[in-house]
Length: 209
Ligand SMILES: O=P(O)(O)OC[C@H]1O[C@H](OP(=O)(O)OP(=O)(O)O)[C@H](O)[C@@H]1O
Ligand SMILES: O=c1cc[nH]c(=O)[nH]1
Ligand SMILES: [Mg+2]
Image 1 (tube, protein in one colour):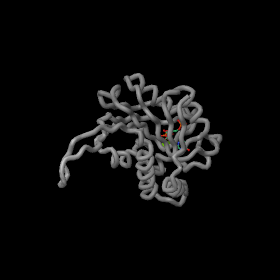
Image 2 (cartoon, rainbow, N blue to C red):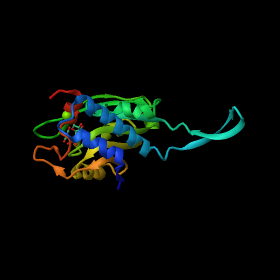
Image 3 (cartoon, helix red, strand yellow):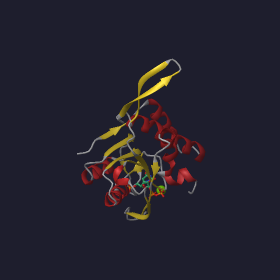
């Protein structure tokens, strides 16, 4: 079974409350999404491998640490996942970005894939899949499947708000994919929205309601 971790740093909780509030407009919603993504990536990259390098400071020679060059890629699930990409890239500016487009049918809640464009070497990269919402888990599962079909081997899923139903579904179908969330909410509503959640993340990020 994969790990499910809630990253509840006080700054993350504070910014998530801003996102949840119906009074928050597009600009502040978008800013908070990127800031939380950045804080979450800071937390989940604690285990990145380091290697020794010889450098020279103005005072003389020394051996110090740098990242060992593990290759990373950020994979936003469109549209709403785009709202987290800039935050991640602020900390990992050299990461490649692969896009996967999915929309959820409003009536059936079934996900539909409409776009996939990945870096050619995703089989050799550690993938960080980002999407603000993990509701039924259908979209995340289909995205992970699409990545595995293209050779991806190592990936983690980073979401802002998760519903228990979605966590259970991804863990059941993809026990190799660890999940990180800023919050685990109570439940899904009858029409498949997370409660208390933050509403429709894509619409709030892009002002399309
Ligand atoms: O866990 P699920 O039940 O599949 O729901 C979660 C999905 O729904 C939202 O996307 P949406 O379909 O609204 O597309 P959008 O990002 O274009 O708004 C969200 O960003 C997730 O991708
Ligand atoms: O609460 C939800 C569930 C799915 N997608 C969203 O944007 N919000
Ligand atoms: Mg949406």
